[in-house]
Length: 344
Ligand SMILES: [Mg+2]
Image (cartoon, rainbow, N blue to C red; front, side, top):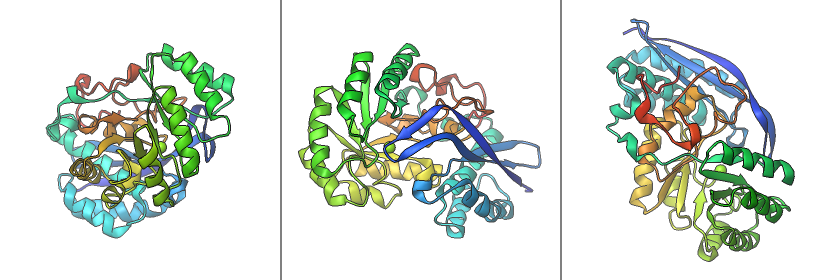
């Protein structure tokens, strides 16, 4: 079969400047990938490269020709395992670039079969947890306003970015503006182990559900230290990037936060989910700041998850792709009226 491929860099302005403990951004650069078959059907995917993991739109664009050459050479959008294995051998260290190709191929394969992606996997759309909505760091007043807006928009779960010297003040503002909302906290490696234990005790007083990445990924002993002393469950994000990291963190966290842009493929994400389960871990699927061309695919894994953090496209000022309906945080896979990932 003849498959044709193309890619395009897109600049995605954010609705609001987005700040975490490591820095701020007002634009996200994604690279959209399209794979078309000879009947004119097109699968779409996107890379949302993260500098933290060594990728930029430039590195994605640099390796995509090699990756897409593999797709064209194999020439079968249903040979997903074979293509992904070869992609991994071709460029091992560029997971966001590989994820874009994986997503586009899965979209095309499901479209050719005329089913939404979750049906291709036999998943139950009614099992999807709701997604959280993220409140980035900002002045305390702005955090309070953003929280109010999110509550008014109907989001039942908020993820708060902390890791500052104003953590308690921010938390108080959020709790005040969202007294009945489920709160999760992401420190993005912002605390020392001892500080993290104190913060977890404080967060427990504000009825926070769990804490993500309290300490730097380079400090696995620190993560164990926090896990053993924290009154709250601990999730690993920066500490859990690939499949091999799942067993490595299993004795020091309760939850792993997987991302397509870290692990490089939809199939690898599925393997990570099952590996995590085998180690007694709960599973969250997160995202970068991403167009729906990427997020829509992640939504189809939602029935396998305990927690979803798939708000990447909700943070954009506008997105040329529509995806799975996430109004008020519900991942409405069952309402999809089109095949593939639903990105259009
Ligand atoms: Mg995180």
